[in-house]
Structure formats: structure tokens, C-alpha cells
Amino acid sequence: MFKWGYFRDPRLTSDSMDPAEERRDTKRHQENCNMLGYVADSEYGIPRRCPCGGRIIDEVCGKEEYDTHPGKRFFSCINYEADGFHYRQPWVIGVQEEIERLRKRVEEADEVIKLVPNLNKQIESVEAQVKRLSLLLDHLTGDVYNLTVQMANLEKVTG
Image (tube, rainbow, N blue to C red; front, side, top):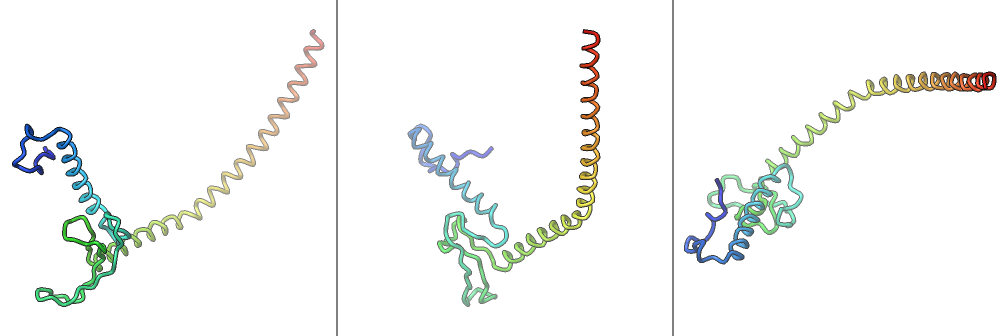
């Protein structure tokens, strides 16, 4: 089982830490882990904003000694640091994921478009049924009125 206490300073023991300080320490560690989760969960497609609130820039790396792909592009947070809290996603991956997401939306829209003719037929059928039921209701309302009149006449005769 994961416990937040593992991140604390090993020199501090639970006996020497103030309970209020321990809660603050636990809360800081929880916020730290939550932020890492937010970054990991949101790294899909072309990022709009970094979880830190920073603006995303289109970064192009220059030639470095160890870099075999000079000019490689990234979507990066303007406040980027290699601490896991900021975006730095390769441009190709972001664009590929965005294209896959858009392709899926187009396929879903295409499925809906294919259903439209059937839905139109169903709507027409329901409208026809509503019209028939309205006529039937009008007929039944007339019958009820006639029965009410006949009932009143019978009450006069018997009453």
C-alpha cells in the first residue's frame, strides 16, 4: 500500500513532526502526485495549455552534439523544466494523436449521417401515428360527449 510518509525527510520521525506540519507535508506530496497525474493524463494530442497554466509554444531544437535529429520540433510549456510538471511533447506525436482523434470524430459523424435517412423515416412514421391517434381521440371524445348526454337524459327520465 502506498503511503505518503515515504516522501518525508528520513531524519524526521513521526514522533518529532508536528501533526499540523505532517498534514501540510502530506498535502504538498498529494498535490505533487496529483499534478504529475494531470500532466500524464492530459498529454494527448496537441496541448492547449500546460497544467501549470503556462502557454504552449512551438519549439524547434537546434543542433546539439548528441542530437541526431537537429531541428526537431516540440510542443513545450513556456515555463518548461525537466521536472515532470510541464509539457514537452514531440510535435510529430502531438499532431499524429490529434489526427487520430479527429479521424475518430469524423468516423463517428459519418455513422450519425448514415442514420439520418432512417431517422427521417421513423419521424414520418411517428408523425402519421400521432395524426391517427389524434383522430381516434377526437372520435372517442365525441363518443364520451354523446354518452354524457344520454346519461343526463336517462337521469331526467328516472329521476
